[in-house]
Length: 341
Image (cartoon, rainbow, N blue to C red; front, side):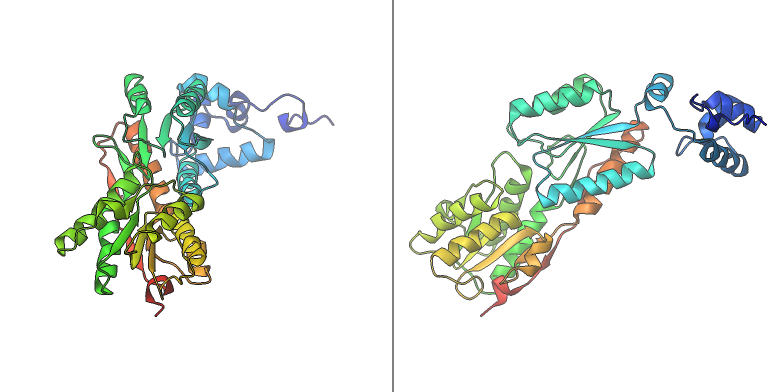
C-alpha cells in the first residue's frame, strides 16, 4: 500500500498541504504556526501544530519574510562578545526574542566607528526587523542617525544616549553607591579608573561617584581620575599610574570589574594588598569577582534582565506601542577588597 503522507516523500511539506490535511484554510494554518498570532482556537491550533510535527513541516524563513515583510530576526551590535557583561546581556536579548518567535544575529564592532558602520549595513542587508545597539557612543553616533533616517526600529542597551530609547542600569546611582561605601569606611583620598570617555557607562558611573564625594566636602582631584580601556590591561595601566601619585589613593573605584581586576594586578606589583592597603571597588558583579583570591567589592548590575527588558522594548516599538527608556536599579555587594583589614 502506498503512503499518501507528504512526510514520506521528497517534497517539502507546505502550508497548503497542512491546510488540506487539517481541513482548514491556509491562513488558519499560518496563524496557528506563528508565535504570538491570534485568531485561532486553542484546540485547532494544537491539532495543526501536532500535524505539522507529524509530517515534518519546517518553516521557510525566506518565504515567510516575503509574505509578511518581516524576517523575524533582530540584529545586535556589541563591542565584543568575549566580554562577560555583553555576553550575559546578549543571552537575555536572545532568550526574550525566542519567547516571541524571533531569532537574533549578533556582530562585534570592537568600538571602531568604521567597523560599526560596516556591521550595521551587513545586518540591514539581511532585512532584520530591528536593531539592538550595545555600543552607542557619546562622541556623535552616526548609527542612530542612520537607523532613524531609514525608519528601522532600534533600542540601546548597556549604554545610553539622551533622546534615544534605551535600557541600562542606573549608572549614576551605581557610582553613588560605590562612593557611599567608601565614605562609610572613612576613605577621603580616592581615585577613579573611569573607562572610555565615549561610553555613557564610564561617564555616568564616574559622575555619580565624584558628585557624591563633592557633596561630602571631599572633591576628587582631576589627577586622580584616569580614563582607560574597559579591559584588564587598561585597568592595570591606569591603576599603576594612580598608585604612582604622591600621595597615593587609599581607595580606587573602577567603572567595571575587568578594569578593577587590572587595578588589583597593579597593587600586587607595588607590593600592596587589596582591601588591607588600598580598597578596590568594581562594577557589574561578574562571576569571577566573588572567586578572586581577595573577593572584589562591586556594584551588581542585572545583566540578563537588562537584555530581556531591551528586547521587550524593541518588540513593543515594533508594534508601534508607546515606549519609555528603563534604568534598572543596581546594588552594592561588599567583599574583602574593601573590607579586608
